[in-house]
Image (cartoon, rainbow over all chains, first blue to last red; front, top):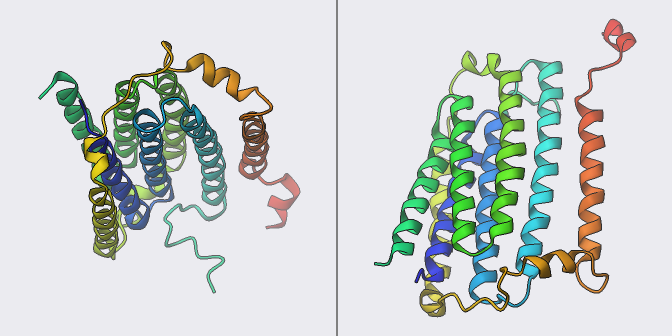
Amino acid sequence: MIPLSWYLTLSALLFSVGVFGVLARRNAIGILMGIELMLNAVNLNLVAFWRYLTPTAIAGQVFTLIVFAVAASEAAVGLALIISIYRRRSTIAADEINLMKW
Amino acid sequence: MSVLQVVFLVTGFVTLLAGVMVVASPKLIHAALWLIVSLAGVAVLFVLLNADFLAVVQVVVYIGAIAILIIFAAMLTRRVMTDSGPTHNPTWWLALVSALVLLGGLLALILQVPAFAQAGPTGLPLADSGLADLGTSLVDANRFLLPFEVASVLLLAALIGAMAVARPAAKPEEGAE
């Protein structure tokens, strides 16, 4: 039997790795990859709670499906923005995109 | 230690290692490939949690669509990053400290609930891990029809928005620049 706390610990570790990626990466695509890691950790948490605490209510799986849809749209729009910035500025380093910095 | 526990530990280790490589790898393409490994590890964990349908969706949507999209974007823009300095911010240690503080807080929270350490998976009420229930609940007006439709509208908006944002500027505007 795998205790629920193992899943929660792994999920917390994965989320922290994603946070580090978002904060430390210079490349905008690297930042997006960090966000994907964080979303995955959240999904893992949701499914683990569904399986261990409320297996009769399907809401945990539905919530995860909605997160999938949001992640897909986030990736599509985010990468479109990055391509657009790359066309205009020839860079995708997050610290060089300072057009709207006061 | 049971077989399932060994499977969990190996999968969790691989997932975590791949995650660390995603944020640490100097080459963006390598990071994207490690991301695929990490996503596949999470799919295996979904199978361990009896969420078969979600595991399939994870493979199809995350590995099949999002990871490939990221690889495409990395290929379209990769030339710049090889010669524009380091791949991480100069203050990456500050990011490491923040991530570690967050991790410590989360772990402290998890350990405060002793029920989490003892909770075992209860028997599933339905034989097919609730797949039929999941399907009907998504089209039932009294359950999750509204979130489902909102998600489809969101996807449509993202589709049109992504095309509008990524499309090159019109010709006259280019000449004016």
